[in-house]
Length: 232
Image (cartoon, rainbow, N blue to C red; front, side, top):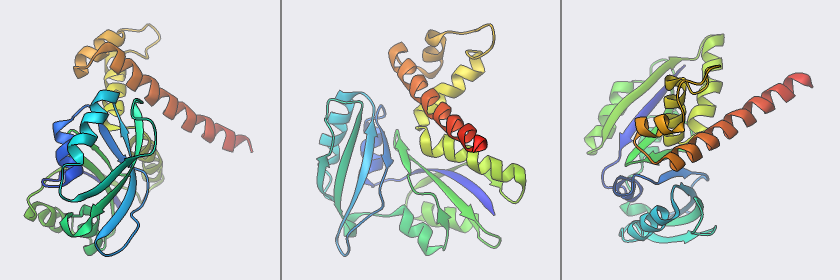
């Protein structure tokens, strides 16, 4: 089995189009879809500056496909959970296209700056080229991010690592963390400060610090769980 990560610019999808217009906001799906026929529901998490989230939702609600978008947590926060109800007949579903190909995929897709991040699990005989062609035939753009074989111990370890990196961290958190590592932020004699990291990813210093702190907290929590399980 292979683990494939694709970036998909899902043109015409309300979430992706609003995300492209509000790149400071990251959207992450946190529940499966419910409902049948025309109306479907799910819960998403929006993260970013509070004013950017408010602008995103105002823009998002203007789409004809959106029936309702109800905040489940305070709008003045940097993380807002929102219940979305949408008209399935006006929604081009990437998940349905993948299902039509019989492809396993990871739930919890994230969207940043208009690009959706999807992780697929392909078995022998699955045709990645045909899957990509199907997505692009609908007017979307795709980029292959990674292609990893999972039939070895190393591959299984990679699967666990990718779960942390791609499920727990947002794309912006991964970008800031990667910049910190590249610039020597974690070396014994620190070679760069948060200002250099912010400059490399072209965001404000306080924003870079927030993203890095959240990434570190998530990774350390995962390591803590792993160490605890080893002691049992």
